[in-house]
Amino acid sequence: MVTIALYFVAGRYHSTPWGSHVNEGWVEWPPNPWRVLRALLAVGFNKLGWNEVPEEARTLIGKLAATLPEFHLPRGEVAHSRHYMPNGSFHAKQKNLEGTDKVLDSFVRLRPETPLLIRWPVELTTEERNLLADLLNAMTYFGRAESWCNAALYCGELPQEGWACPAVGRTGRLASADQVALLTAQSADAYQGWREISLKAALEAEEEKRGKKLTSAQGRKVASAFPDDLIGCLLRDTSELQKQGWNQPPGSRRVLYNRPAGTLQPRPIRRRRGQRRARCEAALLALSSDSVRGDRLPKMIRAIRQMEFIHQVLAGMARKDSTKSDYSVLTGRAPDGNRLASGHQHAHYFPLDLDIDGRIDHVLVYAPAGLDAPAQRLVTRVRRTWAKGEENPIFVTCAGFGDVDLFRRQLTDVNQRPLSIIPPRPSHCWVSYTPYVPARFLKPKNGRYTLSDDVQRELSVRGLPRAKTVHSFSELGEAGKRELVERRFFEYVRTRRPGKPQPPQPNVYGIRITFAEPVAGPIALGYASHYGLGLFEAHET
Image 1 (cartoon, rainbow, N blue to C red):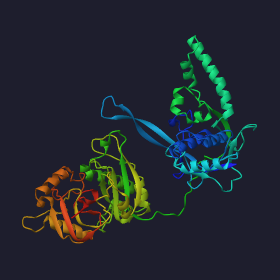
Image 2 (image 1 turned 135 degrees about the vertical axis):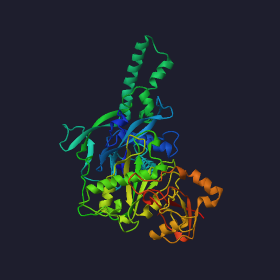
Image 3 (image 1 turned 120 degrees about the vertical axis):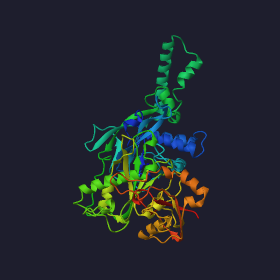
Image 4 (image 1 turned 30 degrees about the vertical axis):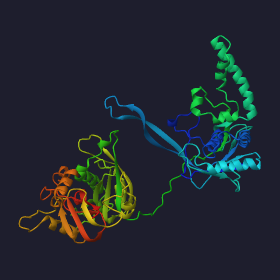
């Protein structure tokens, strides 16, 4: 008796049964014995450096193929994901848009620590057992390449029940089992007998079709579709078999197995009563469009309006549930409708452009006072927002909750750089990431209230240290003015919706702030700082 164990380290087993299309959603479970034998041979060529199948491997495969294995299946459940894959075609009207096909990726979801056991009632020699152990140790996946696994000979105690066994000799389906047909190998002798009869019939059919005796070259061409032995059948590429018209690989047969009932039954959802979510500082929202064109996402220059839309949706839902919970941390208003007196501790909505294409693809909802369990539940209910000039909505998905330190460590842009508005380390220097609009009317001519005064006041009301220096980009010479243009600050929308508080003056500035001691982000100052304006990023001094 020999038993192998397969541990699927990613908790997934991907495979499509022979004769099924990937989009049919079928997963072979248990795996076909035919697949097991092919996997062992593939590991020998790819990992052990075989140029041809050694004699020990031939005898090993021959013994395994001559018997029907049994499977002890860990409990799992069928799941799938959906992807749009490029198909090489292009749209008839929009030549620059590549066509796609929707593909279903079905798999069995498993526990990584629970193995799939496969046992054969055979006795192996020491050399064959050592070779099998080497093949299993070198195996990194089983099924499709996504099915990462650790494989080894199993030496533990075998379970007594729960085995999927061949239905050979039984009088029908067991009441406590599901019956599935698995692709198994013929024995070497059985294949040779089948090959002799089938090849003779194929030659006669070809001669009858041509109306004359076949030449030796024509006979060899017909015979090439019939591998010389069982090892040749297992090594034959699937695409070649399909090209030759085989509806089932030569050397294989279908065997009915009784699979224990409930093996693929979904686990019931267990709800833990009384468990509350921990308060956290931030939530990350992901924006996506239903269009194949990526430019359907809102532009970064419309940050203030897009952040208002998110806030508007949350505020609307909060009003409906106002009798159940207090959502003032999200809306910025107390239950009586008055503005909060706690300064800037309620939610800020920061636009993020992680793929650096000038469009908003994520939103960081940051609340220094913390998002409690009701606020988190409300954020997860946001499903859509809108963009100017688009009839279709932008879909919103809550990617997760956590303190700022969590997002500081994990959020990176498309170039794998840390997010600059919440850098890994505190910084002495902070530079405008979005335009700064003064919160009060400036009076720079008589020096009564300058841009620097406005920035220092904003820092003070947020509990941040006083800045050592405050400079606008315009004060930094031609390079600063050029940076204003390159960052498109003059193109940003700088007013809120009609009926909402408007800026004291419409001027926009780029600001460079330095502190005596390093300061941690995020830093948002000035008018509409809760809606994406006045956001700063760390900068090397």
